[in-house]
Length: 208
Image 1 (cartoon, helix red, strand yellow):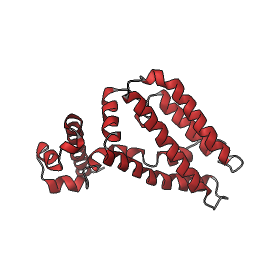
Image 2 (cartoon, one colour; image 1 turned 180 degrees about the horizontal axis):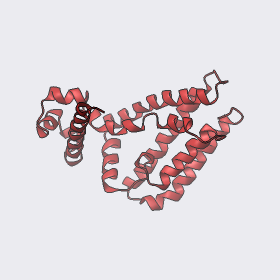
Image 3 (tube, rainbow, N blue to C red; image 1 turned 135 degrees about the vertical axis):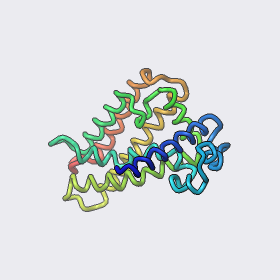
């Protein structure tokens, strides 16, 4: 990145950090974009150049994870099936308490999850991000099994993304309700194994 690009990224991050702190303190609906702009001493038009919508101030934190499933499939070990790689990677995420799996009870992560999933417009935007994941994973699955030119890669990608989102939300909800990550870990490992067994059963014999 050039110096100019690094400066823009630092400004973008500072705006988002300030906005999220305000949303956590006062509530998403009770903080306006004008409030955020004033807090970081920029104009509203400048804020909207970095974040087109109020929701973008929060959901940009998910940007790095878009396409992650596709990267896992493309980077899998020789001889490993796409579903096996995705299963292994999600299990590893649970073990290290990766926030993307929902199994992280760090207070700041819990507060962020509560903000996102208890605010309808934010929860909806996070769900919408799954569409980009489905597109990326569909492409990776088509590369993995090039002989399958039908609809199956997209159907499987849709199911994988939906399963991962459901697992993460279920974990996050349990933690927000007071369960610790260590207490929840054995149950969620079983849930993940069951979920991928179901996916694998449908994809058996197809190369996935």
